[in-house]
Image 1 (cartoon, rainbow, N blue to C red):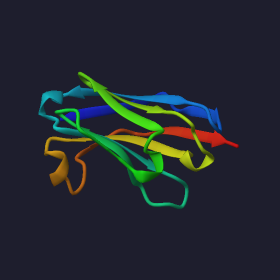
Image 2 (cartoon, one colour; image 1 turned 60 degrees about the horizontal axis):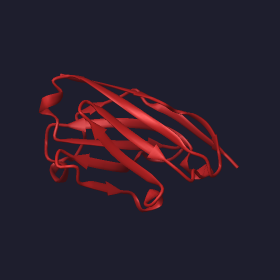
Image 3 (cartoon, rainbow, N blue to C red; image 1 turned 180 degrees about the vertical axis):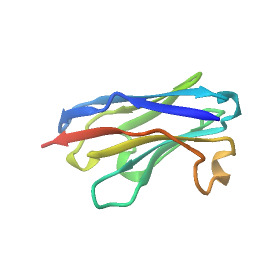
Image 4 (cartoon, helix red, strand yellow; image 1 turned 30 degrees about the vertical axis):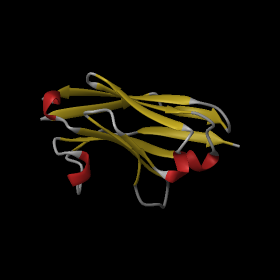
Length: 119
């Protein structure tokens, strides 16, 4: 079993920055893929970025060049720069033992951390 706990959310002005963290505990050596998702009110959850064991990353088009996903041992990060109001939402950390390209639904999820960007 793996437990995920996000932190670092909060409020920011448009153009500002926030850094999210996700602490993984438990059987973390089993994890092959980790990702950040977000969900805005009334919208479907979307994947923001993901990273595999080798450090390869994929980003949603809406955040390319502004967000950076990184990992350090059992901690996952999301550096968010040049924030926009449309980045507002609940951000979730997710992880799975399967390789990134083979995941239909991530097995492990955190509780989420709220990000609010004002104009």
